[in-house]
Image 1 (cartoon, helix red, strand yellow):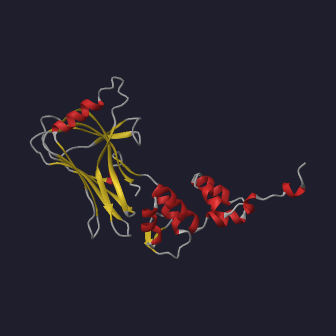
Image 2 (cartoon, rainbow, N blue to C red; image 1 turned 180 degrees about the vertical axis):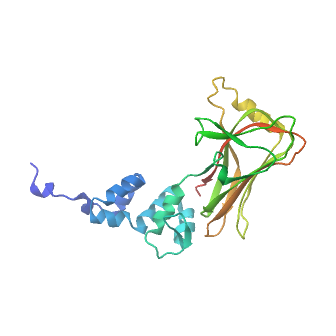
Image 3 (cartoon, rainbow, N blue to C red; image 1 turned 60 degrees about the horizontal axis):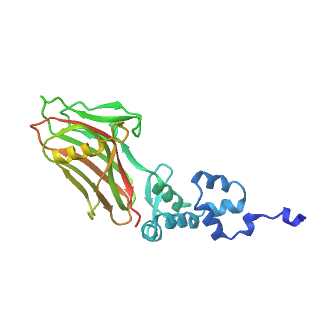
Length: 265
């Protein structure tokens, strides 16, 4: 028989904070927001710096927690602007959301890139891409230009990030050395990402990923290295792809996106 006292049992009161923290670590941010609207205690619990600091430590490790929370005064506002201020409410939540946000720039977003002015870059539709369109480099063999593409990731938090390019190839013709490069704009230069490909490297990758006759496995993810942002201040990260050979045309490359993926330390 269920007593009246059992009917009135409030689990939000009986469970200790650490148990709720553990439960919250398995929930999405949306579900956590919904839970905060159920009662005053859970609202206070899940909007506290302690809870979001706990999530950062659990999901990203002690070193990132030390860098961005314990030994830092970073703050990110609702417009993704980062300040050195610890007086704002629940700054650890905003940092957690920033860490969870995928840092990805699609090559179809022309306004986010700088290109050399020698060729007309165009996008083509591709439903398997990030935004439904990809950048396709296909010069005429009669036209010979160098190649340079550059973009910038803004306000990236300190840490180590793998630099990943997603692309596919169609009988690539890229004579000369092609350099993939990434570096953070900071006073104390950290690790930079660099990779150099020759024409044979492109052809080898083409043969490797074009083996699927159904043409469903043509995309590949190329990590060119990692960049390191030192200290406790965010900064911009510059990414580029360059081929200085001006005697040969370049074609046969589809570029989908470039991504910074945080390394767990």
